[in-house]
Length: 410
Image (tube, rainbow, N blue to C red; front, side):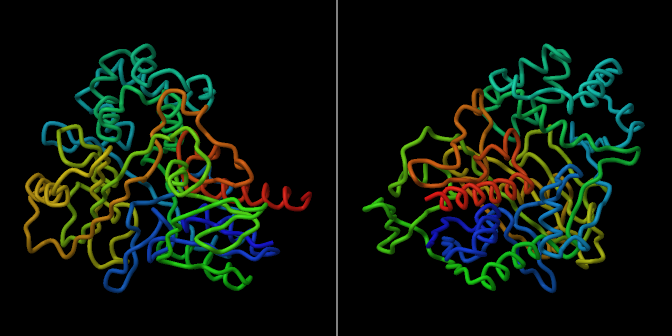
């Protein structure tokens, strides 16, 4: 059977990897690089992700996938420190002692927050899909905890959508980041970079006889006499991994729109370390970015010969004008970075960086099969209520399994 896969992100590559064993697979990717948000830059002697990445201790499907691709021995675990930038001051929040010293929450508020964190994994988030995150936190922990701690985080990630974000997403976010010891959170990374996963998938697909076409956007899709016409070529089955509304624009089924937001992520190579040893620094003070992620405060700096930092910003609609210059100027002034201390900068922008988990989002999730066409991606159930590499792998494998079951009975 001849199968067309639209989109060369992690879900599309995972599905192609599974399907190429027994089917004729052709994968179309509009960009020159595979991997989607997991694609990487080549910088000097190393490669580094365009968008910051790590995995979590509960990503069991992802770990099995690494094992199948002979990459498990590359997986490493590091302590990931975190903090909050408030009133022009970096406040470390990794250890219990640091949290106790944080001056912008009372002791009682800190106890409430710790209590919620400990029980977050036991809460059934499906019951919170239609409850606003603001309402849940205010009722559970009080308005002070929400306004002082959670509202700035929600604002930096979702902007005007923050009041429509569900408590299901927020609780899932808290739960997934609750793997903490006395020295901070434990997160995983592939020694050398996640590009190795993308390259391994590409090799595997091609070895099995699959075809990958880069810089090949699909412009039209039609159903004709029981088969699919994709830009003039005929296929028995189509799997789309692009946002449903984008698929609809080229002839796919008309479904309810999945709310998405864009991301603008600047990566910098620096001479010096700038965030006091903290990996993930959330910004409470107003800035053109919501977080500063110091990659080399997580993965050892000696591997790169320089410090690497990401400035993460999200947007809805149009990308703010001159956002790259705004981010660089603010970061340089705020953290006293001299021009000569910046080795290089790269800017990645994706208007569909990820779904926004608004109220009632679960009801929008499309089934894997829609009118004879298959769909999977960041919008699929394994990525609810928080997207991850684990969710991308699960979605890719599950939709591939669905395709094989349907075709075997066809």
